Image (cartoon, rainbow, N blue to C red; front, top):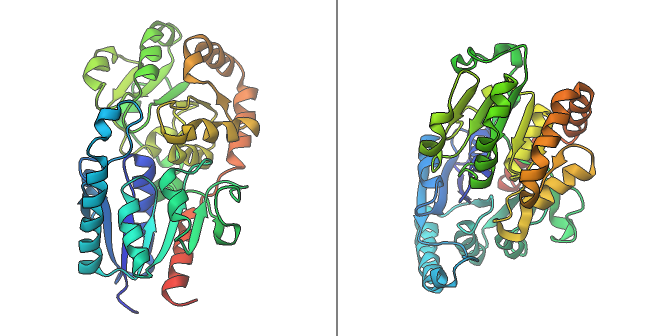
Length: 364
């Protein structure tokens, strides 16, 4: 087999990073001789997560457009200019046969450079409402892998392949009876386990609401697994008790998904794909601070199909607890949500994307 070279680029959040890792792992499984290089942005979490997964990564001096502070965009034109030169150097040194973009501003410079040299490009769009980078890159792509139906409004229809989002293999392969996690030993297995996910970076608002209702969880002896984010861990770790376990980040999240009865979560694309695979009744709280407000559209897609409860952050204080109480009381409601969200699962997304990559590499 030819020793093909592949660049995978994307980052900023776990939703862009972990699909890239899942694709890389399956590519190596399909052909161990593949050479894979990741390209991300300096200072972003991919610079730490990718090496931990066993892959090399090159960083670009690039950042996204800051909508909150115009002053912070002062150096943005210079960063874009410099990152293009960095990307040019990376491309010439590595000379990839194909490039995969998993979203985020880090993918834009390297994939634009690749297109100049007629490199085949695949982009993978995780969200129902595409980001700016992927809208631009869609014109250069050979194939566009999407996770939702009716994406023709954003991308050329002939390029679209409905695959779903790549999720961690461990999540798909795991079974409830085989999962063992010592930190669950103290949980009330006869009661309700609630998993709270504020995204890979944490959510100030979700943390605030959960902390304000700690007495409710303790009073009802509800087991709470709370991923608060590394920036908030010191602030909330004192809330830990017999029934409440607090983490900055959940590395092996499959252990926690399978033991949870209800999930309270942001509506990032990767998280939603994982929730579909594990089939958990969920209360989704979209972040209002993301580009294109894409988390709201992700959550609305599920809400419209009666597959999840949607609570906007502005209504969180008034609506979260009533919805949660309703779910706690009604096993039937939990079952209906679970069945509906399970129907949206696409557990073979990674294999389908890798199949398309291999077809292009072999000229198929």
